[in-house]
Amino acid sequence: MQLTDLFNLSLLGRALTKAVTFDQADGTTASLTFGELDARSNRLARLLTARGVTRGDRLGFFLPNRIEFVDLFLACVKAGVIVVPINVLYREREIGHIVADAEPRAVVTTKGLAPFVPAGAQVWDIDELTEAAATQSDAAFRLPLEGDDLAAIVYTSGTTGRAKGAMLTHNNFITNATNIVACWRISEADRYLAALPLFHVHGLGNGLHAWLMSGCQMRLVERFDIQRAPAWFAAFQTTLLFGVPTIYVRLLELSDEQARLIGKQMRLFVCGSAPLPAHVLEAFESKFGHRILERYGMSETLMNLSNPYEGERRAGSVGFAMPGVAVRILNAQGQPVNEGEIGELYVRGPNVCAGYWRRPDATAEAFKAEADGVWFRTGDLGERAADGYITLRGRGTDLIISGGFNIYPREIEEVLLDQPGIREAVVVGVSDERRGELPVAYVVVDESFDEVKTTEACRQQFASFKVPRAFVRVESLPRTALGKIQKHLLPPWQTRS
Ligand code: MLC
Image (tube, rainbow, N blue to C red; front, side, top):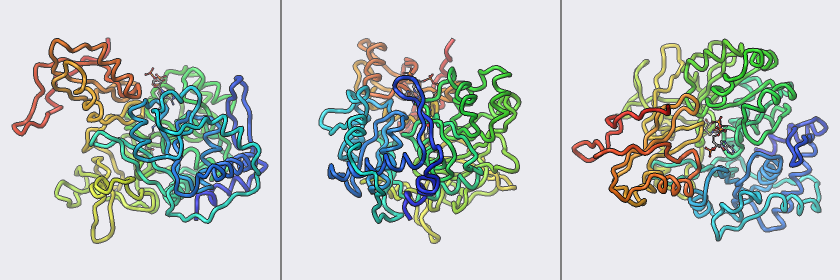
């Protein structure tokens, strides 16, 4: 099976049904049916083929949420072209690495974002592409693809500092969409507010795919905005939202009356990509009258675990394994831990990616062969209660999550060490009520260090969420006898006043 077969449930099966509403450049909204989406993507698939982009080629998507992202994504899925999504907040250095590694035929982007794409990469403008596709035939376009063909290469930062591409197959996405549509009871009666970025698997593999499979209606917005959110909920009569904790923290800012009205029409709020503090879940329930359903996934595995739709949605827990997914919690010696003991989570199943693109070393490190199959090492720590609920208990790696975006300290540290005056640097996540964590740098510096210039250098090289919010000067970094930095011994950072 290929993804198009799954999407055809709606693209063909519900051709005349309204599929999506989106904003246009002039500020008005427009809508398309599933049949219209099908036709638009058929034209684009033909255009890609005419330009020599074929099965197995990669295409970079450096695009904000807009309807043309959806068109092009569908076209690639149909043509067997591997989608390489790029975070729109990324800058030249980060994009350059992805382009060098994935070798896409082109990076498709907007006029506004094009200047950030490093020289040398082929750049295609999304509006020109859409215009050029208009002359192509919109008749059905279908290739005989396999379920194991790659549908996307999703870059996820690595502990080595440079992002690696998780190879996600058609089957990975099919399993994921089927699971969440079934487990979270998504149907054509739903109205899904798509506010998460489509360049991450949360917005793409969960949001977009569940919409296409279930045939519900989608309101696509460029990004979550607390000022506009009440109007989106009301005008669209939203019933379904996928969010990261920062979105739920921000929704708590709404008035009780706004919250009551939203809660009345909603069916389900889902949260993931970062831990949801129990007090936010409780506060949200008293204000909106809904208990958020928390689940756990990764770019490499899509959805692993979820609280049940019916039954207890336990605060702080991420519930049980999704259908077909096996979970094992092992101690440092590789032995299963007992109930209530903390270990590292390993998963196995049709949701797990096919490895890292051109990185056999990283793939070998992340996958562990056992007598009963190959297990993926998540790097996340967790424990299982006697009744089966699994709770995450931190991470084995240094990952910082800010607003649902991943930050690997090593990547920032490498750049800081290249800046004038910085002799040593370490980046840690400090807790932040709204964004979960914020990156802060501890530095050992000499007189040539200039905080403003260093911040500016970071701004040029990194997505804004990775730029350290503060530089804490220390005499030396606490180290073990072997020279390893002991982050837990760093002096506490005073949060913003
Ligand atoms: C955030 N910003 C964006 C943006 N999201 N800019 C453009 N497009 C977007 N989609 C920038 C803002 O410009 C600003 O930059 C900064 O982020 C903070 O913005 P804010 O207005 O203060 O927003 P805030 O209320 O804090 O909310 C941020 C947010 C955003 C929740 C909307 O963080 C977000 O969309 N997060 C979702 C991340 C996600 O989808 N993760 C899934 C990973 S997949 P500046 O320069 O002013 O700082 C995964 C697997 C899984 O992890 O499924 O579990």
